[in-house]
Each structure stands twice: as structure tokens, then as C-alpha cells.
Image 1 (cartoon, rainbow, N blue to C red):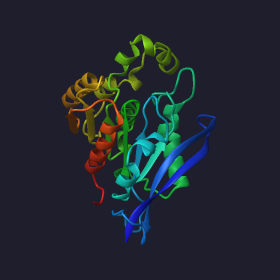
Image 2 (image 1 turned 45 degrees about the vertical axis):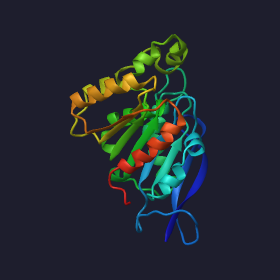
Image 3 (image 1 turned 90 degrees about the vertical axis):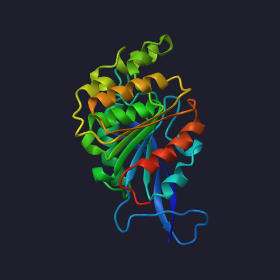
Length: 259
């Protein structure tokens, strides 16, 4: 028995956003005849699911277009859900749409209603790059009981510092009303988190990335807070060859998957 994947482009209506939106979904598929693919799949039960979040200049298609996420997921029998959130920083925008509520409440209800995936926290993961790395950790820090693990790749860890850049002023005014509040600041969320309740966290970043200093600062804060932390700092820039390699490392790190 081989495992390949079904790739689904899903267009649907969001009551929270009050508009039509999209997500790309990878689902494991058992097959007898697929050549060049190998992997495992859960016997009988629904597959585990990874919510994989995009960056500021990307959309729900970009992970599938620029990495081998389909092939990597097939080897694990893992479903991958990649939603579109535009330039929202996964927040309920002050002047815009409620993307945090969409992500954290509506999407996890809709996905298992559309697709056969596990709803168990032990089978649920979140990861992302850049803005999506920030979104993944924000989600895990605000709703730790939902996930078995969370990972950030080249994440925007110090979102307040980014917002002080003049070129980001208009964006941050629209999204946050100027300055992110404590529910949108990873350091504030760490300060009030119960480390025993947090899922394991994976933080990676290239040492040549402009966001590297913020990642170093976050790692120090997470260690002081007592979070269970895996760190992967290595040579690399803020670009797709690093993220294609890193998502494979993250998938290998995710706990509880059959390999």
C-alpha cells in the first residue's frame, strides 16, 4: 500500500469574514498504483492535521507552489490546511476583517465538516513562515490546549518593533490601530502563559535573515518562561530555499506521527 496526496483548492463562504475566501488542502490518499511515493497512513482513523500559515506577501497557494509540502506530507499521512488571511497578521483588524476569529474559531470548525481529519489536539499542529510564524505561535500561546506542537520559521517575533518601521506604519494602523496590544504581542503572551500548558515549540531562522535578532530575543524569553523549546538557527536568508528545507525539518520534529 502506497500513500500519495489529494490536492484540493477549496473556495467557501466565511460567516466571520462575511465574504468568500479560500484555502488549499492536502489530504493523504491510499493508493496501489502511484509510482515514486511512499509513506504511512493511519489505519482506519482520520489523519492528523497541520495548519500551515503563509507570510505577509503570500496567499493560501504559496506553500504548495514553492515547496515540496505535498510530497513531505504524503510520507507522513498528514493532512495540511493552508488558509488565506491576506496581510492581516492573523489579527482581528481594527479597520478590516476579523481574521483572528476566523482562524482560531471558525476555520477549525469548518475543516472537519468539509474533510475527514482528526479533531484531537494530540493530532493537531500549527506552523508558519514570517508573518505566518508569528501567527502560528500566537495561536499556540493563546489556545495552547488546541495543539500538540507549534513551529515558527523565520517568524516576525517582535511585531511591535516591526510596526515602528515607517514603511509599515499604514499597515499597522489598519491592522492594530497603530501598536499591537497584549493579545497580539508574543512577548506579552509568553509572560502570562503557563509553561506546563504550552505545547512544544519549534523556532527556526536563518542567521542572515533580517528577522534573526528578533528570533534570538524570543528564544531567550521562551527559555526564561520555561517553554519546551527546540531551536534551529543556521545559515540562511529570508527566502524559499530555506523554508523548503525547514518545513521538512519541522515535519520530522512533529510528535506522534507514524513514520
